[in-house]
Image (cartoon, rainbow, N blue to C red; front, side, top):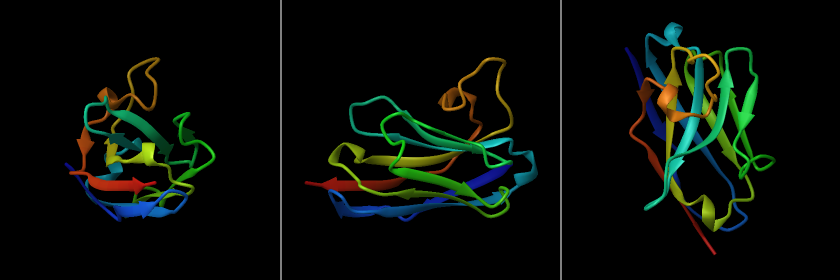
Length: 126
C-alpha cells in the first residue's frame, strides 16, 4: 500500500507562485510513475504533470512552461512548483502514483493510477 498526502495549497493572486508537496509513505518501491492532477468544479479531471524514476517529465499543455514537477526517487516527496498562476488554474490538486501503465496508455490518464491523495485546494484570484 502507498499513502499520499498533499500540502501547500492556498490562495494567490494572478501571476503569483505556489509550491505543492506530496508526502509519500508506505510501499514506495512499488511506484513506477507519479503525477499531479487537478479538478475544478464542474470540470473533468485534468492531468497536470507527471514524472518517472529517471526524472523524465510530461506536462499538460495548459501548464507547460509555468509548472515544474520534481521528485526524490519517490522516497519521500513529489513536488509541483507553479509559477505565473492564472485564475483558470484554480482547482483541487491531487497527487497520484501508478504501478505501471497499460500498453499505449497516456501517462497523464488518471485511470492508470492506483493511489491518490486527498487533494489540496489552489485558488487564483484576478
